[in-house]
Amino acid sequence: MKNKIKELIMNPLVIALLSYSAILYQIDAYHDFNSYKILYLIAFVGIYILFKRFDNKTLDKRGKKYALGTSVVLAIILILGRTVKKYLGSATANFINFKNVFLGFGFTIFLIPFIYVLICYLIKFVMNYKLDKKEVINSKKLALYSFILIVLGKIPYLLTFFPGVMTIDSLDIINWYEKGLLINHHPLAFTYFFGTIYKIGKTLFNSGTMGICFYIIVQIIIIAVILTSVITYLNKKGVPKIITYILVLYFSFAPDFGYMSVTLWKDVLFGVAFIPFSLAILNIVDKDKVTRGNYIVFLLSSMMILFFRNNGIYVYILALLVFLLVYFKKHKIIPISALVLVSAFYIITGPIYKMIGVTYSRTAESYSILLQQVGRVYVNKGYVDKESDEYFKKLINTDNLEEEYKTWIADPVKDLTDSTILKETQKDFFKYWFKTFLNNPTTYVEAYLTSTLGYWYPDSAYVSVRESSDTTLEVYDVTQYGIYKKSLAPSIVRRAIMSSTSKNLPLVMMVWSLGFSFVLLILSFMLSLYTKVDKRIFAIYLPLFGLWFTNMIAAPVYNEYRYMYGLVVCNVILVAIPFIYKKVIK
Image 1: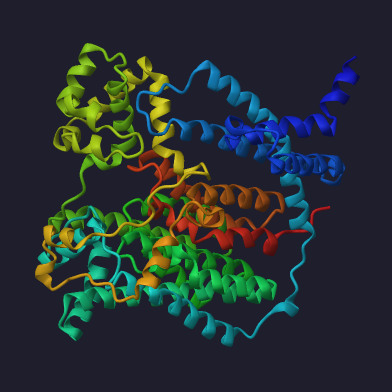
Image 2: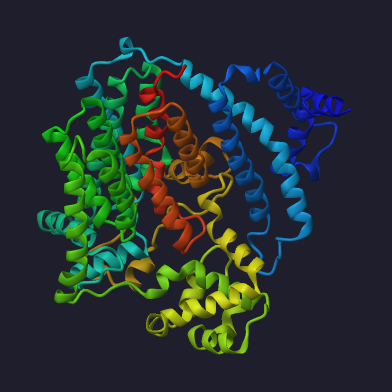
């Protein structure tokens, strides 16, 4: 009897039906499913053939464990994310209930076999694929043509948003530099890095507008050099010519690189710094030594990661751990230099900043998700004991909370929070936050899931790039510096540029999807573990996981593209690592 049940469960047709039902649930197809949708039937046939032809014996026991573990994680992400997205817009929806938990658990189990089979095929493909050095293109010509094409690909964006994309954050940085203010809400190092280049341009052309344009052009050149280095590196490793050409076109014309290249944000250069940092590590592995040029790249990229975003230090410390554990024996200069940089960071941002009177950001910024959780309790009229209620009502203007609260962004709650009280009573905050959590655990979990959805769920879209209007420039008083906006691009170019951010096209959606990049990170990490790549390479993975984790615990927006840009720009490298650095496994 047991054998018959086992045979039934393992029957390809049964597994295909269960997985198919989970896929329909995940894409929310049941509400409009009918027998006339022939594509649904074709999809089922394809899934059945996939299971019918699959031979589980072609992968070793260790590989099966990696495939199963990864498929469980991805199935949970897809099914849980689908449920959270459905209730994202409602602060009063209690979506952690018996029905959703039951359906979620069941369809997760059903989806696992389908993902497992796909990952098994992926592992076999990676292990069997061989790079061919005959595919290598002339490096100097490739570098020159790639650089030129990447720069040219950014010109339509520069003309469309001339002198560059400027948001409220950008205007703050301009004002703080022009007024000589020492404010570390946006890292002081970036403010004055930008300001120096901006001032040179402003002086050369006697125009604030051209000063901004000059900085954007310098930023485009920096990014083009970095992206070109990725292309030439992969070319030397024997990546097929067709892939190399596709990469050149992708880096040149993909809308995410276009928009970010012309945007005045600290996040842009902070993000692209992960590329030279990663390539420096890969070059150490390749040559088994630290060359002078590679060491300079390592130092410069490390400083950009540390000083161009306030969460960079936490990301870098994870890399430091790998350096101390793995690099000390053969490459002492790397962990020692990293330690010196981290020490310098704390000295500069600590006593030196204090001595020169640097002002820091609001305490509420780093409490975004925690405040969201408390706010959701009040909006849902959850139970808050008297002592906690008295504290929170002093801290937060709860009278306006129900009207202002947004599930996907913490700014309304932060604006209603007294940062001075929070800064002075941080121990009390955690005390009452935890007491309220014990009384409202599901509400806290719901608030957390809606506050972080975009960082782990692929099918989640949000505004990726913003632009300030002429009125905003006047309100923020940057016109006094001679800074104005005027699009120089023809209308047909402007329409094409604006439509490139559409989230309705599947391929374009993946370009802007942080959750998709996170899934790639998981798959690449799993493949690197399985293929036993050099341990030194994990100094790339840990900082990227750290970047993701810092957003998972403190991001004020549920899906802010620029916060995770460092992961997005490393997608190509993450895909390449298992193919290039795999070891032969018997």
